Amino acid sequence: MNVARQVVSFLGSRGLKLVTAESCTAGLIASCLAEVPGSGACLDVGFVTYSPSGKAGFLGVQHATMQAHGLTSEPVAREMAAGALQQNAVCADVAVANTGVADAVPSSGPPPGTQCFAWAYRLRDGSIAAFTETRQFSGSRNEIRRQAARYALSRVEHYFNALGARR
Image (cartoon, rainbow, N blue to C red; front, side):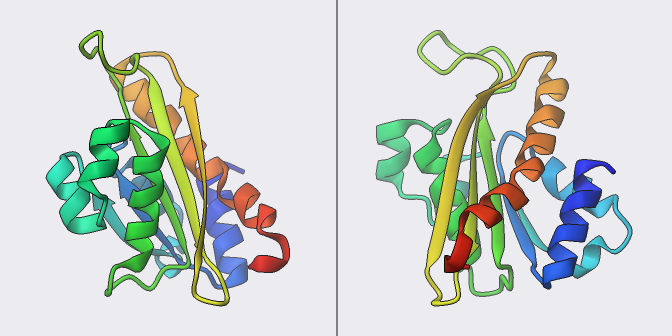
């Protein structure tokens, strides 16, 4: 069973909905889920925010966070995921966020293939718990984006289970 099918099955079996907040993957995470029949029951909203103004305006990422840590960072991914869950029209319980570099950048930035992820979960008490990771992928620009999308989905159940009794 592929990872998207596993995530749809996992979310569906628990009555959970997911929102994506994507930068580098540009909607591929949501697209992977949408390929699975029945995914409409668990895919709520997908945000694609490449620019700092989009991250701030649509997801509430703080400019200070972007300036202090850079766009490709776990703190930015964390704020993207939490911000996606907090939007008024979003009915999701789970958020997956990605920001990264898929091709060559100036020498001062992170190396190509660097991908930062966050998984956020709305808890029973209404608070949000989030987990972050940074991973390095190789290949062409689009190969990196596809690997990142698959990886993002592959950790949804893992981090849900890590919540234990808090969920």
